[in-house]
Image (cartoon, rainbow, N blue to C red; front, side, top):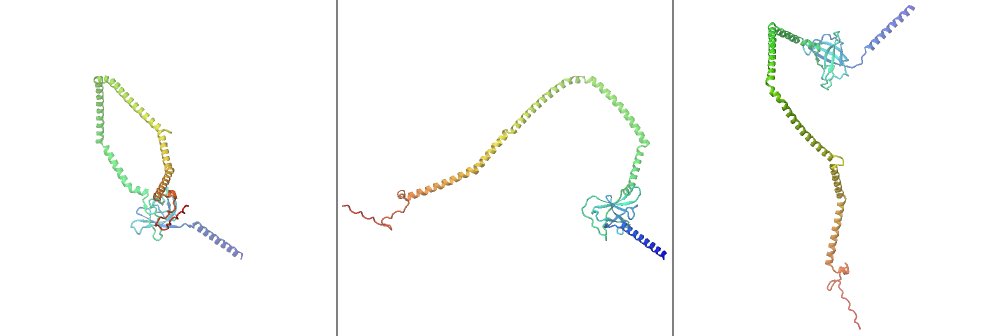
Length: 328
């Protein structure tokens, strides 16, 4: 009975250890990052690239290679599917290239973007969008290797033709001709020296007088330039005095400002008053005119005032004056 209890405890311990290991593996391999699927299609070889290879965006690990197979849409091409973190800013101008890690020969996918487009690349895991895969540096070297070798072969052939026996003889002959030409040039130089010494002495003797005249002419020109410079300095001094502080120009400006202010004061204060005085004078003249008209119509108003005029004989309201009593 005791042996069964030990066996049961050992079995429970083993099961618990296995469960702990499974939980640890699940926890270590658990990845909550959301990734999107994209496709790469190329006709070049993808040697060294394996599933689960790293995908980097400007050197940052952002995903992995999911699968490598033949492209069903383009015959002869290789299709590479990659999963990339959804936070990576992929655009329609993003491109991929095949890079290699050091000397191990292991390849990985490098994503990059020149910023030519700002339109985001929309993911679709059902029909993954395609990112262009540009040839790597090694592939470009392989493609151009044959052309480079042909150019090297052509340069070598031309060098051999240039250094052939016939050309070497021509070079030797050319060097001899150059040596003879140099000797002739030396002889000609000596002849010219003798000619100068024997035939150019009068001309050389006249050179000092010509130099003196040239000096006099240069002195006259220098004096004229000095006069022009002095006139220019005087003109600059005059302009400076005119534009100096409290100078004529500034005083003229102050006088103009004072005149403008006086005109504004006259227009703002004196002119309205003159207009009012003219209006009052006009009213007084009109009243004086009406008074003169009234005097002309009723002169007796000067004696009796402006009261009503007594009716005369035959007019309504006329009453004859009573006779005065006779004196005894």
